Length: 160
Ligand code: MG
Image: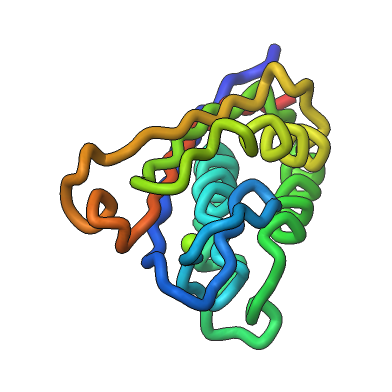
């Protein structure tokens, strides 16, 4: 009998000038990007925390501390690949993931198909099992003022 495990993840980064905006492994043309030790891919960070949460094996900060040489400017899709190897090693399978990116600007609709494809390929999933939604914060707070970007994610895993 298999057992379902759900995981939740969230992440937030400041948006600053002079940094690329990386989401789902692609660079989105914009005047600002995530301030971070790694490449700052806030979507992938939330996704990683959801997957680790479903397996109850800690969080991204434990695996990839922002004080280490290894994670300096690290590509978050590489982290995701390594986390997927842990999924396999621990006898889990990912059913689906559902994410939301919260940002004031830019509009992401045209980039979402490629982000979904990148994540589906890395996690060996059908694209139908990778959902990415985007919304604004209605002008409220630091996200609404364009000073931050946030992502939240749930992931459903099966323990085989
Ligand atoms: Mg992060």
